Image (cartoon, rainbow, N blue to C red):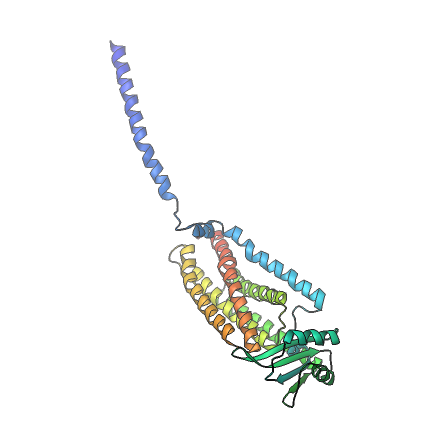
Length: 329
């Protein structure tokens, strides 16, 4: 009898333990699920959890850009396709009410002078051709006028501008010095503001990547860069630094919220700035008939799109990695 009572008590205790354990299991499961972060969409999940893998994209683009620029150096002897205003030559401007096929004229001049560098562009007003511009290097002024006159009626209103090779080379050298000085002073200002090497390097690297990748794309397009194009690259440095400093200031200087909350705060402002500028540049590109304005707008438009990748993937990766190494979350 004594043993049977003890056995019944042990069985009741065991059954009570099993009930308690079965009741506690759902609570533990709920606690585990509550610790997992929820994402609003798949893009946010990838952006936050795969940021190291995403960083391959901007660095791969930078590497490809170096290859493209290197191939351009091998093929042309220079890292960019220079227009007459940078390397010297003759510019012939011909007003005309008669339509001229610029492609046909370009082919004709190239066949006559295969060793010369010839470009034919049209002058237009609201889509209507009002004349043409012929730019040529390695050909004399008289030869260009004589050969062009075989295909186009020059009349008496044409104008000719000649820029010597030494003057063009001097101007190009000065513009390169201006870009280098812009980078140096930009780096000094950024480093003086953040007083930290890694965030400052991230800003400078993003601006450098914007310039190099944009230049590679322009080389692939075959665009001949003149003085207006150099001005566009200088403006692009300012656009790039603007968004990168915004991001670094929000993430480094502010302490409220998590790192990604600060990144999203900067992203809302930065992307709004980028998209409004892209819209304005696109309208200017579509409306303007000026070749100079078109070149400026094209370079800025390409640079702004590239800047979105370099700022919100490359720069974010560097800042997140740097801060997480320091123990911030």
